[in-house]
Image (tube, rainbow, N blue to C red; front, side):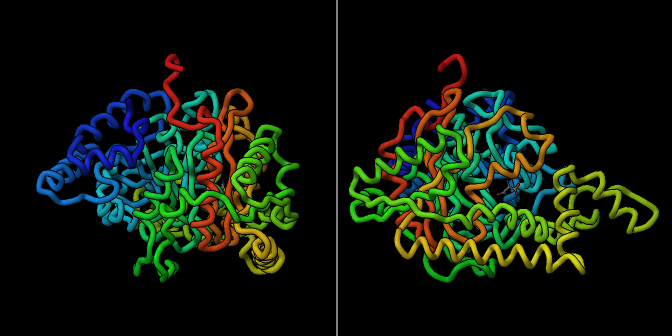
Length: 489
Ligand code: GLN
């Protein structure tokens, strides 16, 4: 069995009890990566030497009678936009090639404090801009369920690594859906926490008012355990919330009795029959466990996508100004500084990143700011108000995570708008700063997994996890990774 097949919590329990060494768990994970990564390309880099040192340290703690923490010896993969001293951080961009940060992100130190072992850095759409992991300078990641299909994005490497059983858990980042969408397409659980619950210190900024780090795992309980390890106030992120992080593990057995669930009616018309059917079936599971279920009309949410594709590029155009050929990674030499800046950026950024920087600069420029950027901010407020109206009557909302199952590689790369539509149902939660998660629920077209999304108001993680655990209990177990390698299926 690969480490992921045993489950992060079972592994940690065995390591803490001295029944298994963290070193042997790590070697199994590295062997699984060596076995499948040449085909899937989940990883940009491994941190194996550092991981072996860390695993030995965990084993020494156990031997000396000290508890290494709740994630003792659990191998974790990190999206390659999370800064690590132990391995380069490239954001799958040529402009950062070879750059190793001089510091660790807060989530990295927190994982270490919980006893986890970081094994490597996973592939993503360049700077997290995309929905398929095809916008990567290191080449696409493939979906372990069907290698002709995308894993989703932008945290596609993390989702596929968990789905392929290389690691039991991983971290991704979610600006408009980049944890939940690949989680749904790969048959794993993916959580975007409330904005401010997880520190962004050391997360390479894409759109700072939307970015959040969160876990990917095979079960709701494991996702809760990882979230608890990384969440909580951090002085080094000024947007980090002061209050203690929500304790989600405590509520997983609470059931759905008394829970008020709303189904986002407006999303159902825009999803494929397998995705819509999964939402309706998940609603029935919740009702069967004593929840009250009603449909809610939230037409404003469908305008989130247009607002997002003005706000996110605007913030990105500012955040990405720092890649000037001086401070990080790539430099293309030229006779003067301005030409050097221009040539470095022309050579270092891929086409989608360039499109976003140009779009963002345009919508922020004098004369267009009010018509585009300011208007988008008004729509953002409308989305938040619509959610507030719904949450006056329900505790959580249920929706499809994606409009369809994983699509074939190359099928949307020539049409950016088609690609953007993959995030129609995930973006509103980012605009509002709310938590949302995807739970694998059923098998759909082509035998591919279908995820159901549970949304909650700000800091509503406990209600969200409670509902997610009930949804999971009624899910088709075949819809959940890890998926055996082809031939073994
Ligand atoms: N797919 C969306 C985009 O391209 C969301 C990306 C993300 O959440 N990082 O912007």
